[in-house]
Length: 475
Image 1 (tube, rainbow, N blue to C red):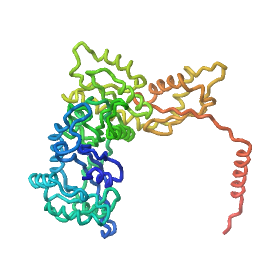
Image 2 (image 1 turned 90 degrees about the horizontal axis):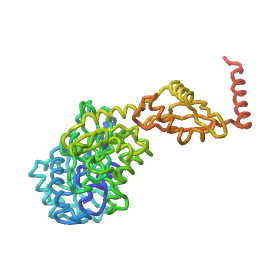
Image 3 (image 1 turned 135 degrees about the vertical axis):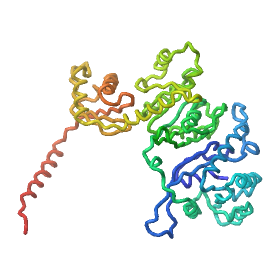
Image 4 (image 1 turned 60 degrees about the vertical axis):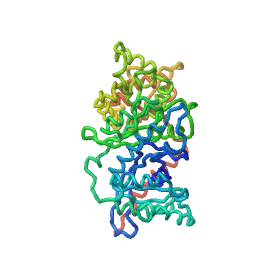
């Protein structure tokens, strides 16, 4: 019916995965959009910020499509969870976009959904939308949807954008003028949950949100989209992003899994802090190691979250597991490690407190004088060595960016600082600067001397400026 395509069109970006395969969307996928007021509105009419949600298809696995996945799991067992998510959306929404396919015509499922909406008090909220009205010849077909009893449909094409402006104006008129709470407008921290399949990402999301916000199932790969879940935790605004479980690239079953993998990477890029979820009941896998390297390459503040710790044997201690993990996930020695049980709710406050701590570290900007003093002190204790006896010099150092903290060092020979000494320098900087648990990006730059032409040009410019200051003032 094109629900996901319509969401992407309204959001003006790809939020939901769009694929001809039925049942791609399973959870409630949401995004925040800004609605412009109708064109005829008085000057100064404000825009409205709304959350728009794409739900799973009702009854999709019971009547059509691929009912079984590549490992033989019966996807129809997900139907009750998908439909439960739909009912939650019906209860919470101010406006329900009941989307039908103008080209495919009304189906028995459309009739079932219409009945469902009436039974659960959603009829008054319905705005009927006929999608795939790509040109005028489909308008008459779209009008058949009026037989569902929700009035004349809004004719749109998510593919071409036709009718979208009129639809957004109708949504604008139906949305109330409620002002957001102060807690809803405060700066939120964004956390992306990543990990291999069945590591407990969705369970942790639901525990944090205090509700069954995303579907939890023993079927691997249940989560496909990157799902944004907003909530308050201890009075602080948070956005948790549940991502698809990762497996080896060669094992990806279809394009949908490839899309899901790319959405996971996009979630990592936009998040402030990453939870790398590790299943304590199984060995650290190649997927875990691959994700670790990806986070290092992107310089992302990372918490290694050891989930299902309540299920490990009694003879496994945190000390022995930490040694094992350090050996397996090389390069993330600076990342804090938190042991939790998402299902039991243990360790949750610790991991959230750590997330805010890392976000603060990554957003700190240190004074240039402090950076230079620390660099001078480190070089005074141990400088880079050179086989040719060349002395390494740092001419200037300063922090130029945050997220990640980025420090530029202007040096006489960058090659002297790269490699082992760079790692040494990073470790010392974490000890001396407030970046003990987040990645630091170091950039080595060689001082460039101006050639004779540049010096003459700068000299002429200075001379002209001095001449201008000597001109007599009129008046």
